[in-house]
Length: 238
Length: 106
Image 1 (tube, each protein chain N blue to C red):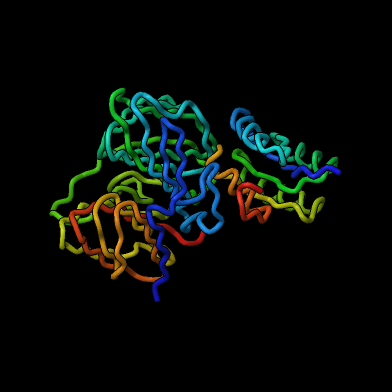
Image 2 (cartoon, rainbow over the protein chains, first blue to last red):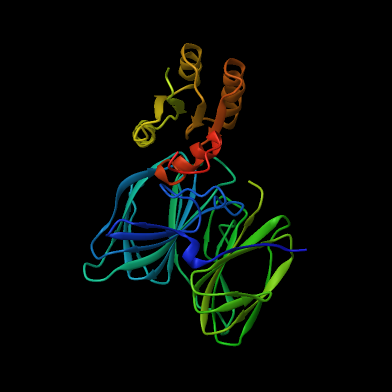
């Protein structure tokens, strides 16, 4: 029988630094909840909003797969590997921090906030050579289909990471359904509602709720309203 | 009596090691010391009792495993934690969990 965990949007840890408002689904920085540390290899899911012109100054990372998905606005990126880039709405950025790197991320626009998801996944290999990539998220061939935006395979759709993880995004019209099959034995899926209302196997979810499901081969999502969903399929053992 | 939690951090990236030490030492109940190689770590452990060994980036899998085994021979109760992320994101939760802390204010 499937195991599940529900994380309501309002139950997340809020860090309000004025220029940055970050809702932490899992323990992060000064937010610590021993019941909310990770979902398998998924360790960080931060729902960030940065005010115009502000951002994260240069800071280090190592041994982590760091994924950013821009939801509104644009992020300006610069790192110690020499990459300078802008991540626009509808793009996904990935960094394998490996042996260590520095980067800074700023809201490119002075007059409007940037909203993005910052996601950290434990790598399946420590101390790899740091790398950076970003891609535009493709539109689905048909309405109400999922689009793969991340996988473990460099030749597959979306970005890739050092982990047996697959991420899919879906824009669903009210009343539509989509079936999802877990990609690998012993993986689970963490479903995050970016917008709208959904049901997953009968569990109602609202905007920014999270729902983990594992020990199952798959599940069905039904959109209660027009909705946008992110499915993160990750190993449950790390 | 010294009640500080003593944390030894090993990492080969000097700047990241300095950042991790700075972050850890903002907690007045902790005292973190950094080293850049296994021999230095073992020497520190012979001189002083540490509750936690935090393994940062830069060691091979074999070096990490060997260091963990040799340090546990010196301090059988030490918590050996592979540190991920290199900054403040996971750092505090990793320490709280190792210490069995259930409240971040502790």
